[in-house]
Amino acid sequence: MIFLASFWDLVVESAPWLLAGYLLAGIIKQVLPDRWIKGQLAQPGAGSVVKAAFIGAPLPLCSCGVIPAALGIRKAGASKGATSSFLVATPETGVDSISFSYAVLGPIFALCRPIGAILSAIVAGLLVNTMDREDESAEVETDTGHCCSSTQQNEEEMPPLGERFVNAITYGYGSMIADTAKWLAIGLGAAALITVLVPQSFFLQWGDGLMAMIVMVIVGLPMYICATASTPVAAGFLFAGISPGAALVFMLTGPATNIATMGVIREQMGTRSLIAYLIGVIGAAIACGLLLNELYEWFGWPLQLSAMVHGESWPWWRHGLAVLLSVLVLRVFIQPLFTQRGRLAESA
Image (cartoon, rainbow, N blue to C red; front, side, top):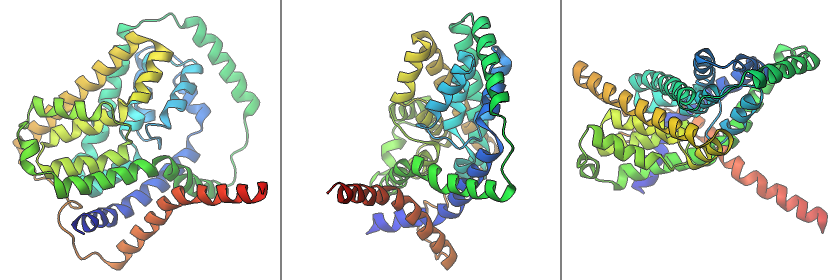
């Protein structure tokens, strides 16, 4: 019963921010065409690495969705460094996870998270370019020419504003929720479970310095979790006693270093790129975590775990939005059952 109350408090607190974030994600999807993103990253060098970080940071893609997108920009001629930078920045943060971070963790984390994601993406991308140099001039020229001609051939008029808004809603509350529903549910459940079951002393034994961050790297390294879902898990860790810097390390490494992403990097770009990628992501995340701990101690900032503190008397509209979010998430799991039943009925 305590678990259910804690879980629902977290859903109620996060629902307005998640719903707003999903809508904004859909709007961004309609504003930034895929071919434009690929065109910006088709030049090798440090410039494309930085561009990839800033383009990927706000994009509404999770750990699973970023893989085909990254392969697409790689095939379009992006350098290994730019592809790696995109693979780091995109799942580590996004408009939906930033708004969710603000709701659950407060404004400091909502600001530090995208900054840390961009920095770790740039470091990883530059390190990949340095450790695994490649002769891409011919490839980039060929692929860029193909991309440009393809863009000219497929250039279409933008749909009317009303249609784009409908498409944004459909994408944000359809495809985006479908991509993140499973891990969002797991993240919310894990956060509530950590809050209820894990004693504070368990994480306090690791201290609040480098060792605690290494533990978070080990916890987050194999996980297949998106930025949005990692937020309540990090909040649960904070509530259980870890330092803000260690929580930030988990939120930066978890979405960017899962097994699937590492496998794709090794297959498509080689072992040296994978090693450089991991060194860049983990090293930059720990550096950001240590800096965040220093800032908290220096300025005396308090932790703001609004959703993880005990239940409040929420207004009715917050419960209504929580119900709406729950319905949208449950639809992802229930709809395939009806589709499968309809197919069985037709075949019979």
